[in-house]
Amino acid sequence: MLSIKRTTSDNPDFEKLVVQLDAYLAVLDGEDHAFYSQFNKSSLLKNALIVYENEIPIAIGAYKEYDAETAEMKRMFTLPKHRGKGIASKVLTELESWAKEENYKTALLETGHLQKDAIYLYQKLGYKIIENFGQYQGVDNSICMKKII
Figure (tube, helix red, strand yellow):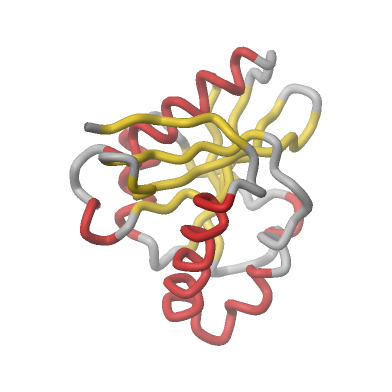
């Protein structure tokens, strides 16, 4: 049975999956990993989700304020053996709902150009590719996306 918990990024279960996410991204990003990781070592994320299957954490996601009307989706990750089951869609949909409850109008995100499954997921859920924003401007390996929520 799946359950979703709203929490913060200092939750031990969230932190445990972040370690696995960072290891996955270190392989995927290669020599670019140091650049990207500096933006993911942010201070406490007060809007974080954990998906549990039978009380075992299997997926995470979070968002932070980009500006007064925009939430930036961060730290999306599902354990490899649980991928392809729609869990990431549930995480992102729940993050969007939470952001709407907090009066955000738009969601932004960044992903790597090699993360084809992630790009497909985001597009399937209504995100459109935009010019790179913020620290990702001029970064060829980044793909930035936006959705009105």
